[in-house]
Length: 309
Image: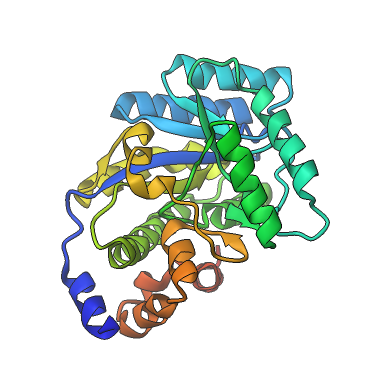
C-alpha cells in the first residue's frame, strides 16, 4: 500500500502549492565576512518588498535581540509589515536532560518580552531545534503552558539545513573575500527544492491532502545574499508565496503531536506519533535523481565536499 501511494505522490504535480516564509534566530548579529548583520536585514527587507512577500521572524535574545541594534532590527521588520514571534531567549534544547521545564518556561517568557510590544507581534512559539521535550512531563507540561497563555506552536512543514550551507559560505569568504558565490547559490536552491518536494509528498501522505506550507529558513548571511533567488525559484516552479497568517490558519498547525522525543517538522512528528516511519525509507529507495536526496544534512554535506564548497 505504501509503495503504491508513494508512486502516486511522485506523479502528483506540485504546481499551485502554497508556502509561507519563516526566518529563525533573528536578529543574528554575528560578525560577517562581507555584509554586516544590519545590511543583511536591509537586503532581505528590500527583497521582500520588491517581490511583495510577507514573512514571519522568529526571534531570540542571545542572537542579539536583547541589544539596541537588535531591537532596531525588530522595529524595521515590524514597520515593513512583517510578523514577529518568539523563539525563546536563550535558544535552549528542551530535549536535553539538564533543561528543566520551569527554567525553559521562564526563558520563553524572557524571549517574549523582547517583542511583545512591537507591532506585528504574533502569539506563536517555535521550539529551538524543533525539539518539544524528551519526556512526557516536559512535552505535555509545555503544551499546557502555551495553551494557558493563548500561544500556538509555530510549526514547520518544510525543514531545511540552510544554516549548514551558510557556515560553509562564511568560512570560504573568510579565506577568500572575492570567492565566486554562484556555486553556493545553485546548491542552496537545489537543497531547498529537494526539501520542498520531500516534505510536500510526506505531508500529502500524512494529512491526505495538500497543505499550505511553512518553510523554515534562518536569519543569516546566506539569505541576505540569496533570498530573492529563493523566492523567484519557487515561483518559477509554480509555487505561491502566502502570508504566514494564511498558512498558520490551516487546522494542521493547531496539532500538538504526541511523539517522543517531541518535535520535528509536522509530517515527521505526526508520522512518529502514529508509529509509521516508512515514508523516508520509501522516498530514498525510489528517488533516482541524487538531487532529490539533498534534503538530508548528510547528503548535503557530501555534495558540498564533492564541489569543494
